[in-house]
Image (cartoon, rainbow, N blue to C red; front, side, top):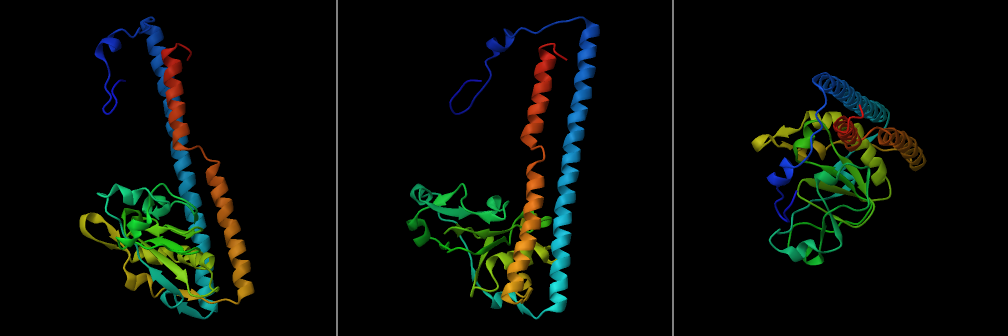
Amino acid sequence: MKGSTRTKLNQRELRQIPIPLPSIFEQQRIVARTKEMMERVDEIRGLRHDLYIEKFLLGRMFLRERYDRLCRTNKCIPIDELVEVIGGGTPSKKTSEYWQGNIPWVSPKDMKVAEIYDVKDHISDDAVKNSSTKVIDPPAVLFVVRGMILAHTLPVAVSRVQLAVNQDIKALKPKSERPSAEYLALMLRGASGYLLHNVEIAGHGTRRLKTSVWSKLPIPILPSDEERVLVEKLGAVEGTLVKIQEQDLRESEISAMQQSILRKAFAGEL
């Protein structure tokens, strides 16, 4: 492939690629063997996806059960009375200088982890001054309130550094040391089934979690020692699920297996 901005294949070079031509019986054997191995790779991909779904549902069910039990046995306060709510925004993409700073700028695509230390996009101080986004001190609870991801998942994370968010994310800054950001994040995950059930479908099919829904979410209030122990226990459970997930074959590894099979077939090594 050649070209700096738009690559293309040189037809003359393509015509000069030597193609091994074994007997028709050997060709049929190679095709059958390749098809068999590709089917096994597809089976691995399917099993990996099923395992991921099972672990995801297991973790969500565990947190939901614990959240429901805490709500039944403890005094609850609406979450908006416990936090300062901070919205976000997107600096103008037309001003390149806005996107050359050192402030992490979080969007839904970054909300795939439980804790956020850094992200791909960064903005400058001037970008903050000239847009609706704000710098948020850690720790804060971040969760997605708009996007297609809300069709099945409520992404929640705790910030560990100063950062800013876009308009599809809300940041909740605890008003006091208790409840902690870590505890609030766990409660949001535990209540995700209820919140997702009340997600609305906006224009073009985009999902939206209205403030009137999540702002009144009841948060069980625990003594400080009980809250700390609960955060440690539930955090350990989530950590275990993450470690199991990290041991799974990634999609890139499965694709590499497919390419390896094709290379071996072309080289006559199957």
